[in-house]
Image 1 (cartoon, rainbow, N blue to C red):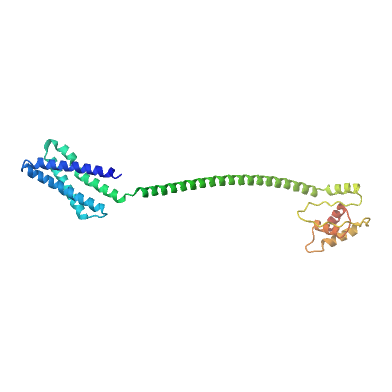
Image 2 (cartoon, rainbow, N blue to C red):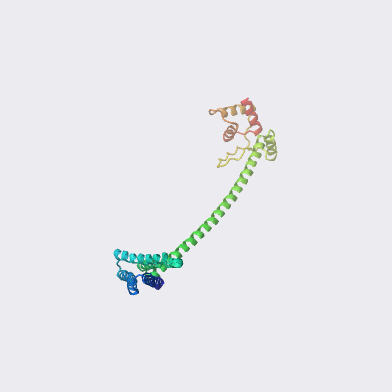
Length: 286
């Protein structure tokens, strides 16, 4: 892994040093003897190489010097300046020389990248541990997502079932209430009819002599049974019946209704048909 960053930096440094030396020899060789030009070129490359070597030594020790780094960049800028100056005075080949004038700066940048890589590099054991931690975290996240999806699906199914059951119960209750309301309406209509009580009284009297029918709407809740009348009791006259009905009706304030009066009348043990009792009630009320 180290070779992936150090080899490009070394190659770029070597190319830039060769180009710098060649340009200095060609450029200064016309003005001074070529050994002098060679010394100048080697001096630039040597200074650059020395500062680079010192930087690498400090980096291997875990240290860093801004002064050495600044001197190294100065040598890199000097080499780049030599290449740019030569390119500007090269005439027809100026474009080609300008195309390679950035190589010294690029070499310094590659060494900077290599230094950053070294400061952040980890051992294989640490990398394996990090990969294991990341894989464990991914596994736990996947399991948590699957658990949440399963819980959401089961909750959705449960809510759908509960909602469906509730809707069915509501429909049954509504239908039952409608049927019960119809039955109560029918009973009320039958009870309020003109001939209902008379017909029931006549039918009951012919089938079971001496039994007075009790025709009232059913009451929700417990009821106290009415005591049976003693057989063979004397029948009340209309005057006595009217007086008894009036007395029971005005036994409380305000006056009792017909149903309450009739219940108390029969609870007291008196006997009278429904037709006669209603007729007495109408006479008393009128």
